[in-house]
Image (cartoon, rainbow, N blue to C red; front, side):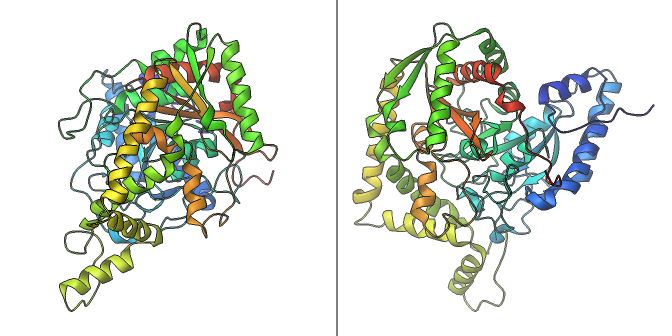
Length: 499
């Protein structure tokens, strides 16, 4: 019997899993279709750091064998995923797109990738990213930048640029990412896909290489809101290996996404004035305002709210994240794992040369900034004040959620920018995250999804924020908007297509 030809373009997680579990599709045939597509298309995009074709075939064969034996392989049966290169994968090199971790093969599996595999998902390989998740454009990768599938001259966003671009280009049907200050939501917006940063602790960080421990949020990318919800249901949940994981039961996220299609009667949508106060691209603002109008037509009530400490979010974020990064990255010294400088004559020289050769410019910048703000005599002036400002920002969100169920804003103030446009000015690059860092400081969930396109054909992203453990509210509103607009159905042309 010959397998029907499977076309990865526009495929969804829900359709693949249903087809495989019902015996109408073979996981091996789907995996081969994606491996072939990656071989044809990814040279121009640079989404994958490494493709694990043999591992994908083995996982797919195991799924097919389970179906043949009458066993249910799981809710993600045969679903081909890409894994951001920050998740440890046992036996598969994991480098965080950094020279300093070249050759590091983890002896253990992250909780997220273990849960995905246990649900029947098939890993296609490791995805490119900004080095150690530090960046907003994917230009900081030691293995080269990722291109935006909508325009190869533009960045895909970062740090999870490889994940967002791979989903947009149908090089996987879903992907994992991490979000420290916007690293899931901003690339999702710039690449026209869906991404969610869950509540802090909702998804285990075990086996996720740390950037800033109190800000790092693992989460999924997908083409549709429901697909993202399905992935999050598998990824989320308490984990005894992560002391910061939340012990509450996982919500019915996919059901909430589907419920949104019935309308938003009784839902209060907060519109924070500060998120529309200057600096936003005119086309982005127009698209977001139109999205708010659409939510109102779906039955939601628009409520003006204020988040007065928003103006301190960027400064607060870059003090906190660099301080934590300087501590977390101290472990990379050339002694235990990863790259080691050759012919060092002393331990100090080994440390200095290893870190000098192994780290790129952005990790070095953040290590130095973080070390400075934690120095005796400077700690209280900078880091201590940042922690107090962080509390004020979180309190703003708590107050706002007494008046509304979700907050809706733009995800990025601008569409994708051109390569090199901001690399020479770190402050301009940092400001790319101006609308996404506050939810990380507060630890609240936030969903990004497409809400239109510029006249030049670049995606624009909508951001839906909920209270702590309010993922279901985000998915309901996101599902309602997606059903009424269908922006997610638009796809970039194949990379090799001259049109």
